[in-house]
Length: 174
Image (spheres, one colour):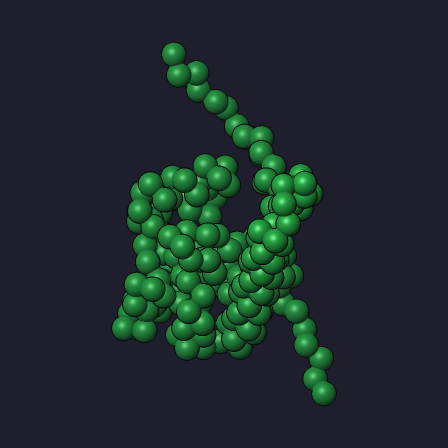
């Protein structure tokens, strides 16, 4: 039996999965960082095999989406100096990357990323099941339990992301 070595902590992968256009996605620069290759190299490999990446596997961010992501994460170090907006890869697109990037590291990192996507999907479905059961109970019982149901719903909602303090100088817009 072989020991499984974790190349990258799961938390590091989870932090790079973003919800966009109804999909959980990862940006090309984040994937390239995890795979240990330059983003340019990753994108060149994808372009050489573009027929493997239909729009539901990969798409390019619009300028507005890029701006929204930058404002969410405050920093743009991984996107700085680029001529074009980054590409976003859905779960299926990340899976397809393993056939394009053929290094041993890429295969191992890809396995970890796919496991993280599966865990994320499992957590979301569990939350949906709880919400459906709660709705059924709420219909079954009268208003006297409404406060209890409202409290449970608040506990089920994920906590809001903490506001990050901006770093650097801020211009006065007067």
